[in-house]
Image (cartoon, rainbow, N blue to C red; front, side, top):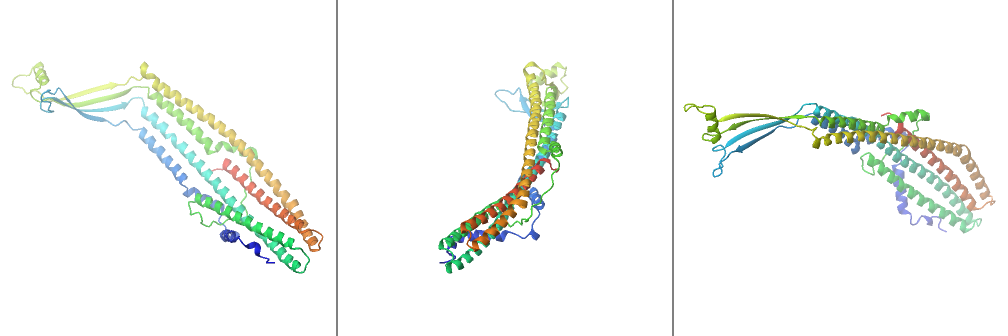
Length: 436
């Protein structure tokens, strides 16, 4: 019997596994997780966009403090119908207008726009925390794939030893051919499993590289041991939620809405429009001649061709048909402020629930880790050793031995999953209470 015929058809899987193993670094050269997080926060486009939003808020505040631009124009009046030529037989007016806020309308609007900066700053911190959490998630996924590959390689090594031993026993007529076929089937399963894990690692590594703005196949060195931080008491953590940037963002939005309400109120106050201009009337213009005679011009005096025009207009926003605009906008912004505060309270309650879930996740994982390390895994290791001795003495079947190997592997796999659960729970807590 060909002891290696089970390898046929798994060449592609072997390539995947080899690529995954080649990308797995040693512990000594592992890149710290904090370094990866700092790189992602520095390079990710959403962080740059959030920083740009802060600058945009400053520009809007500056723009709101400015007056409206003046208006200038030219006007031709009293032109002769059969010869409407400006400057020759009509009056030409060069006019300018300027709207002047009298009661601090621009100042209050600039204050409202400036209040957008704290909103943008809190949004930036929120984005940074989300990216930090996403990097941790993908880092842990890659770490888990590495540990699974190591576990799979160890299981394959032990199964290969069992296969070589079985081949010798088969040649000696001590074991049936079905045992060898069973072992080869198990080796094929492990090879396929390793290929699947290698694919999972490539996917996790690609997502992590995307967060780091790198090519998807860039190597990243993952440490064998997870960095675990201790958690504060739950009550202290719950109190720290109040400083979460999402909650501060809602408070800042409420403050901005309140300032917008004040600005809308000032818009309901009068504003002054100043107008001025210079007019020109050519000689022979009827109005010019009439004005000259009215003012007692003599035959020897020359009437003036140029004249000044001055005027002012005042808006009346408190009149009945326009009053609702300012009052309605004021009430709308005040309602918006109340809505933001209520949404913030709702977010706080949700975050407290998330915090409780994260603490429970860490607690369950720690209990599972303790049980697996101290009780189940050592017991299964002793059981497997006994099964090996029994199989060598023909006191148990191959199926029982393989089941014992699988049970130990599953226990070690459960330990890895519990370690990842613990790390993810800690990362969730840190996202909720960490200080930026």
